[in-house]
Image (cartoon, rainbow, N blue to C red; front, side, top):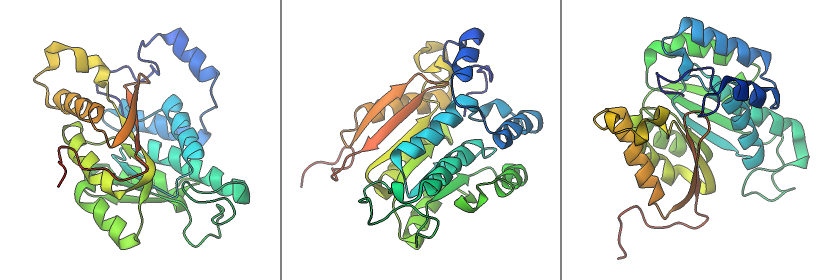
Length: 266
């Protein structure tokens, strides 16, 4: 999701149109269904530019193919574009069949298959119920609908309940909700993640406002700045902030548990 002020046609931070066109023309094409969703989002929804779009969508699909998660959680569905890109990645894993396996699971013992007792799945949370009619229509009408559960509600309270009810941990997360609560959402998700899981946090450059003193009093900017500082100093994870679109931070949880932020030894 981009900030409201960023040009929706720019895929690189520099925003140079020719370079943007070059990047997209040398990346995988956007599937027709997702292109139609992106157009509908920009026509029918307020702040439609916040949808992930072509380049980030192809990256999210590829990250799913690389990570091979059994369970994905997304915070901040918006129009469903990013959720469907990740679901598309899960579908490609199913199509690969026994040639692949889920993260942290040996090949042969848990080969990815549509017949597996626990097929891969994505849970996506949107707190704004006014978006439900549009988003639910596009998710449920997509080729990947069976792989997605769309929930209207607050992930901070609902995600732990889902994890407990389903008896699962998550192998991948996409954090794209309220920037003011990024740290709280992150701390909610972290105990629900499997060892070596990945969390992608979107908008971590926030249209460049993170380094602009003129936005120091803006709550969303302060939320992103605080989150970035918090993650940079979190020894429980590895992290890299990428200048893709509006900033994308890729976070990997440690393979062995560590103390919570600020928690001392007993």
